[in-house]
Image (cartoon, rainbow, N blue to C red; front, top):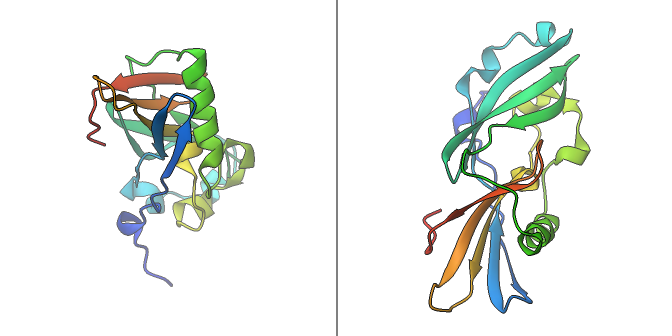
Length: 171
């Protein structure tokens, strides 16, 4: 039996930097995900029957750690629920378009469109979730007097909402 090393199973950081018509440099990266240590203690046989909502970890976002829950139906994760930040709100159209562009450029991992996936494979670390397809850090450096803006945006499972942070980023 292989030794489970959940605490060290940190998703590879993928960062995308590109030029945009804003005359700015845009850097986008997925948030860090921290698995809960209790995942391997769950009864997989019980999860293979019925419908369950299970706390699986935390995303490190603009308002601290955001709890992530998996909705499991007959052993398969059908969706993730991410707690929203209280100060998040829908972005202006230009930012929403920029976030979608940044998310499309991030590569790797499973996104919302790839669900359902087996919960047992997720808990054992055999599936890489592309958390940037759910939530994303977007750093816009415009080199003007304000220097830029940092946004943390989540699009799943609720409509896209963003929160702004001061610049320079401390993420």
